[in-house]
Length: 31
Image (spheres, rainbow, N blue to C red):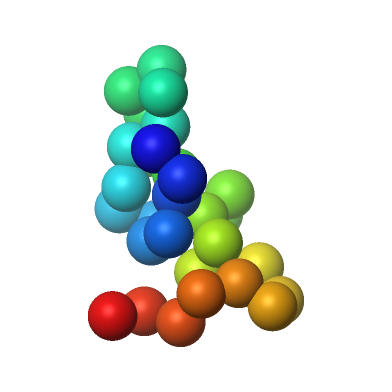
């Protein structure tokens, strides 16, 4: 997973949460 949203899963199956692109400046906006 690329972690576009906080609810996406990382490769280890955990939620991306704060590590998602959505939470980072310059990241993707929510769809």
